[in-house]
Length: 216
Image 1 (cartoon, rainbow, N blue to C red):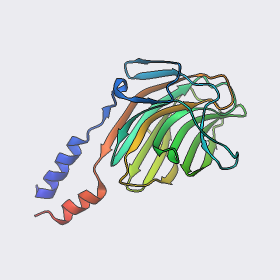
Image 2 (cartoon, helix red, strand yellow):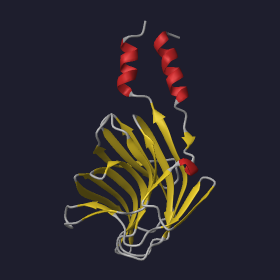
Image 3 (cartoon, rainbow, N blue to C red):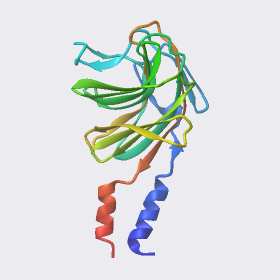
Image 4 (cartoon, rainbow, N blue to C red):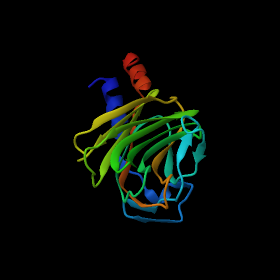
């Protein structure tokens, strides 16, 4: 085995996936009621709360619950999400956030009686993309992969087969808050559950290329 292969093996071993310790994460807009049970976070989502900036609706809001940890570099984040969705725009899922003007939120969003796979990408102003499901689902798995200056968003119904639903630009070499969020823009709140939240660090592609080019 050459020197580069040994270095690569060491790097990959050091980035083994581990469950994020929920007790050591941080709240932004802490909800009034929440609990942690092992690898599960359950929250009562704050009524009339959301994340959105300017476009289409003409307002900016930044007040929904977000439970996160800080990560730099490249990574893969994954979580199982379920919720007792009740009214229009009830939503729960993953969130990756640099600051109030740069973030991605993705998950299930309940609109007009239907479940939608939803992604909002914000760079000063927000956009919104949806995939409408033909029937309600009990839960969904979400995965976000940050590589260089892009984030790929995937969904799965079984944690085995994943389908990409968005590829979005996000500034690279910038630390991010990575975690779970839920919002209830139109109603009195609902209960959301997040299970087995994990973040797996991925070795930096530019560094691996440099190591390869400079291997003896």
